Length: 240
Image (cartoon, rainbow, N blue to C red; front, side):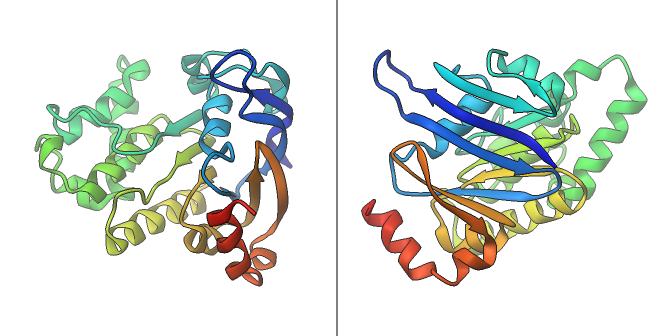
């Protein structure tokens, strides 16, 4: 069952210049779905369009059976969609705990629920528990990325959009972030992942889409992409 569907979506940042040119894809509930492709293919733009930073000029975005293509980010968040952008999306002068509490703001009057949300976040990201009283400025790049993910998860989204989770991270730290994402998926959160790391995206995704010029060039389950990994990397680098 598709939790999210894009049907012929056309969108861009400037009037008359479209980045997405009839993009159609689906995300099955409970899966980790990857989007790969060369620079400029529309990968990050697809996530921004799903999350309401851009509105489609044509086509439909359907989430859990509802057309959400004209909704604002805050309304999509209330419906159960979380978004983790590139880089560390944290407030550096606030503590780890305060950053997470910002994620629970809409539930702030239900103290028991907020406490339970925070506990789940620390259970999923135990390294953050040890630093909960420290300012986010002291976190490593990997810990800051984990905090960005945890800050979205406290609202218990059914769909998490993740853009370039390994960007700027050392391989060992990036591996830990991917491990946490798979654990999040195993706990029941559907994930749509955009990644330049083709090898890792193929490894962690259940199903993948390769974009080119704002459209799907190829799609299939993990194994179909794993069998052609070298060709995929070449195409992603060259845009061929």
